[in-house]
Length: 234
Ligand code: TYD
Image (cartoon, rainbow, N blue to C red; front, side, top):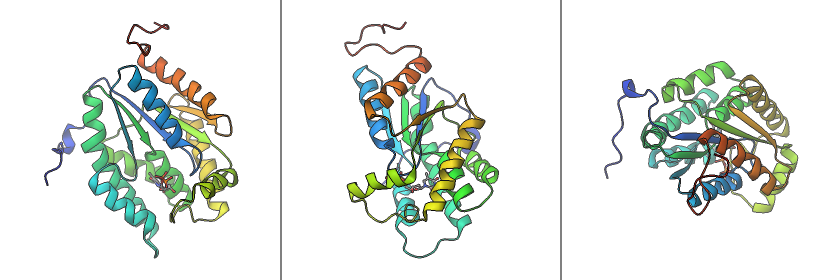
């Protein structure tokens, strides 16, 4: 089976008028719910949305996802970091950049900040090196907006247990690991305030969705209403 054409690495400057929105935070904080709500809101208003995720999001990525999340033995931390970076390189080149070049909105569960938090902080590799690795892998692509859903891991874990999720190597880490990951996410957001919207994920989902919509609408310079007429905020 032939997949999409993969652009050469030299042609990776950002072009096109798309919007790249990522959702970050620990497991069980509600990223997928918020990504879905934003997708629906934009799609109903005529925007073409690509919903995707890392790890995964491509055929190759789903194979890598299976290794990093479900392999039962140890994986050396640097190997784990490279697997996430490999998934990301392929995903950005074949799915995300083409969509942005077509002017579409990409809504993505997790991106390079997850690597900085989980591999850089959690696995105690150097966060700056992990960030540089992802920037190399993606030709330097940063999101226009990153929504960080912040929640205590104990609370989030309660939600996951209720969902009866399958074994996940990262999720199986100790409480202390997840506390460090959470702090690193918050530190990344403090360092790049323009890119981030940090929200207290214990708030009602509908309130969070409204805050996210407001930020996205500002970035898009107004969004038409659901009937397709010009936005009330123009
Ligand atoms: P996720 O897809 O959010 O899991 P689920 O769909 O089961 O909620 O993420 C899978 C795990 O991968 C999560 O524990 C965080 C981890 N992860 C990293 O450690 N580094 C990364 O770069 C990414 C993208 C995810």
